[in-house]
Image (cartoon, rainbow, N blue to C red; front, side, top):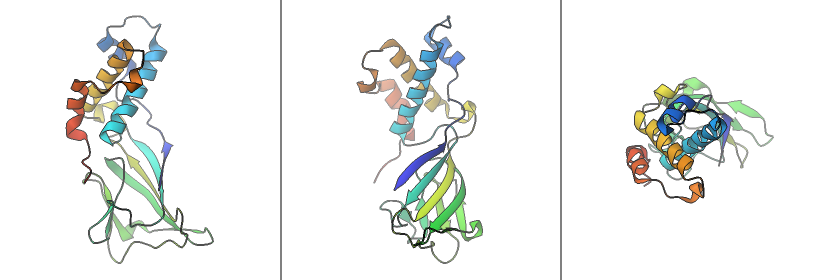
Length: 194
């Protein structure tokens, strides 16, 4: 099972001007550093919460549909990683000779309202790949939206606070535990693993 980022987010959930105002930085001398800290903070928030903040495209390659914890509904539903799910662009299976076959979109339902989002079989069953390794490829978009304003304010604040923490504690920031305020902001968004 491999999850690959195809198209990264076009923007960050916190703009440079917002971060500078929060940090009370007036000069432009450290703009590059602050931009880098915002991106690192976003990545950490995404990793901690197990979700995508800004829309991006992923390609996931799996061997089969029976992935523990992801196949549900008597084998008729398959959960996708990195919620929230926006859309599924394609589901492709590969034969033993590596030829690709697209699963027709009318044969499955994309449930974007669930968290995590999922693909559900409309009738019949999931298409069976002929190739034993990476026989299924799913391309999908995930995130709250394309604009920073689409991200819930608590998650944006978590990015802002982590940016500030890294800015003020430049020595060994990556090894530091999450500040308690950030943990509190992330708690409602963390995915529970059963």
